[in-house]
Length: 142
Ligand SMILES: Nc1ncnc2c1ncn2[C@@H]1O[C@H](COP(=O)(O)OP(=O)(O)OP(=O)(O)OP(=O)(O)OC[C@H]2O[C@@H](n3cnc4c(N)ncnc43)[C@H](O)[C@@H]2O)[C@@H](O)[C@H]1O
Image (cartoon, rainbow, N blue to C red; front, side, top):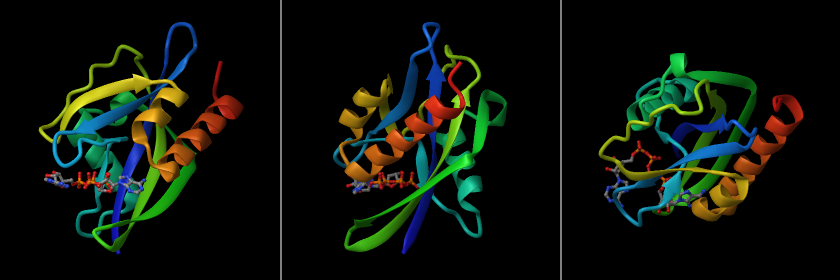
């Protein structure tokens, strides 16, 4: 079993729209994914999600507001082996926040829920995005 972790990152625009950050890989099939990556050593999922989000998007705790009541895990097969992926939720303080991509990604998108679901393609990741959207609409939107 391998394990990875990342953040569903969102921003709230001036007209109160909610948009999700997705990154497009520069390798493989160039799939779109929230910032995430494999757990190193004895890292917890949250520690790995924080490290990967810094490495892949240039965002750290100072840039983000975490919502610790949201945590989702999905499991799928990669190369015939199960992979657990843990997702946490955070909002960028500044909707104009600059995102600094690493070599692992070639593009980024800020998309509404429908656009984000269209990009990620996989139903289980779409389900995490929908749960995040429900959580935001229930608890946070102002
Ligand atoms: N093909 C490749 N060529 C060159 N270098 C490569 C490579 N694949 C990985 N790497 C290297 O691996 C590193 C990535 O490491 P990390 O950054 O640590 O890990 P990751 O985001 O979990 O990587 P990955 O893109 O493989 O995972 P995902 O589950 O999204 O995706 C893994 C697979 O699962 C599929 N997938 C994604 N989400 C899924 C879901 N929800 N359900 C089912 N399948 C899904 C994806 O389409 C993809 O096929 C990169 O630095 C890169 O160098």
